[in-house]
Length: 68
Image (cartoon, rainbow, N blue to C red):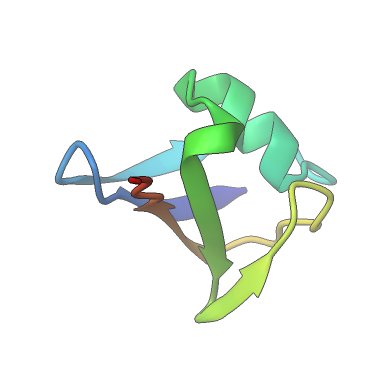
C-alpha cells in the first residue's frame, strides 16, 4: 500500500510503500524518526503509533517544540 507522508521538521513530503496491515510504528521505523519528537496526524486526526494504516492514507509528522 502507498502512504502519503509529510515530515514537517525536514520540510519534505513523499510516498512510502508499506505492506498491508502496517501501523504508524512501522512507518516511523521505515523513516528512522524519533517518535518522542513528533505528533502524528493521520488523515487530519491525531493518532498514536498503534494506528493501522490503509492504502492512500495521509500521515503528517508534526514537530514537538519544548522549552522552559
